[in-house]
Length: 338
Image (tube, rainbow, N blue to C red; front, side, top):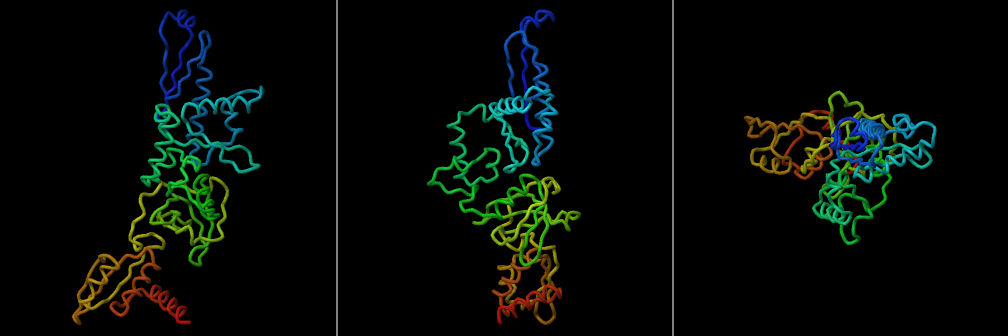
């Protein structure tokens, strides 16, 4: 659970009865409750802690409002209002708790894990300045922790965190990640069913990183260009497996994990090997042949990128194996030639 501390001060009369005279503190986080003398605050403190633990355990899927009312034990006296007051109090203490339910759906609350001491230490103006500095530094990884919203971004400042153009595909990718839903979509002519890991802006475009349903056992992470996705639909919230957020996507397209790893053998005259390495990177292995050619082996996870570079190399290189990769290349060439 994120750093959390709640300090409770009991009333002086209660302290005197117990034979004490200073405050009793019980540290479990950074939320302070210091009500007036004479009131026992253990019950509301425990309620707040139960609510925060329930929200934290739920993760990105969030918790239905009815469940929070049950956990809070508010009774029959307007429990919805009482829950709203507790959530408002937590938000004032710096915690980000959002209602992620769609329009017309029952309330579902999600708490974003963060260290709220930063919010308590800075004024709203300072927080906004920090958010703008994060945008200028192109630190998309900090956007979630600093709760970047469109309203906080000056019109003259470009942002790699918030999309400028409306995109159904991007919106559904973000929602799939937020509510942990599997996402169905078409990509490169193939229907996909994927478990989301992250959505990020890099190399001038948006990427949806996910593990396809068929690859869950191996954990093969693939990076899909959002603008090339089509017909996206969401499964129910919570249907996706929880996955760790990814690091920076490799800059070299041949390192992007779009397809299952395949061992590919290429052959080139020794004089052209430097050209092949320059476009395709260093191979896994090299094997000189008696005829003066060199066989090179690559582990390919992005077949379209491989084909693009083979076209650029022309007759300086030959694709030896496997047959399915050769067939894909020949089929694509036939389509281009008409």
